Image (cartoon, rainbow, N blue to C red; front, side, top):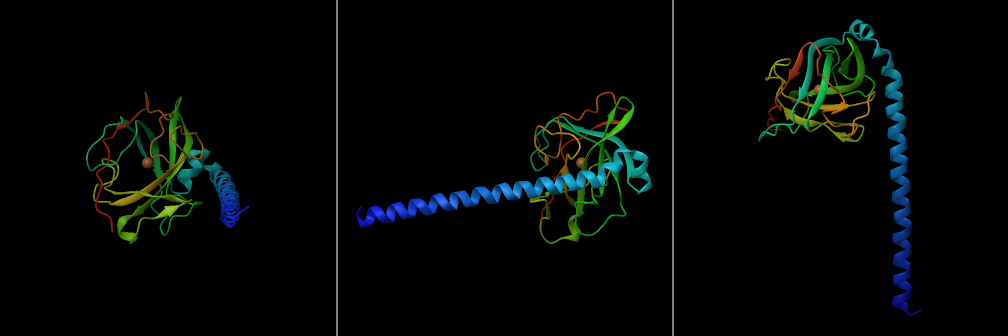
Length: 198
Ligand SMILES: [Cu+2]
């Protein structure tokens, strides 16, 4: 083997090793996130009973929010699907806490409410950069979601579909498998207007 042959071999070996290292790192990160999501599911499972949620001050905002997939310049890109019924806890504040989301999301099914996900809302005024949680950057900043939240409430938000699979991904804002069809207070919303960030 010539010198350049040896060094080429050495470089190839180093790439192979770092490749393996990166793979193991990704697997560990995946495992850590899976463990975190499982811990959250365990902590929040009590809210499958909506009365337990209300007692802890997660209050129903009534409307079953869904989007038809309309695209609007300068507005959020919400794929066709639902967000369901938001139970909002305005007593939760401070940095977003995985174990204490400020919103619980329910899907109306046969006259009952099924817990399907959670959401964190962070007021734009409370931060000087885009928040992130579980390795996910928040979406926004955007106006409040009319008619339930006044549009002056500029905020970032992040959804996590902990209790119902989402074909668009755990953190997609809408879930096409969640339905508001036939629900009381089915509420079709237009994509929310975005606002300038910090
Ligand atoms: Cu939402």
